[in-house]
Image (cartoon, rainbow, N blue to C red; front, side, top):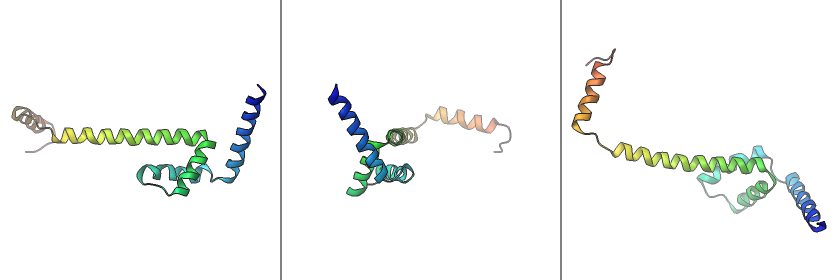
Length: 107
């Protein structure tokens, strides 16, 4: 029991020590976004990881932007499939007729 409390105290002391010396969240958040688009330098990666160790809010933000990045990749793949799909001639004719009959269109 004593070792758990000592370990917990040391962990918080380390977090506080790092938090005082690392860039703040406002500085780190753009780097988190950049890390998805490009490979950061070794120093940038170390600073980001140390900050993420100390900041739960930035860890959640990182998870969210990673989720959005993956979702956009999936959506882009789905839109390519839709673009490459073709309609039957009957479907194309129905769409043309629907557009022509829509009020305010001229053709």
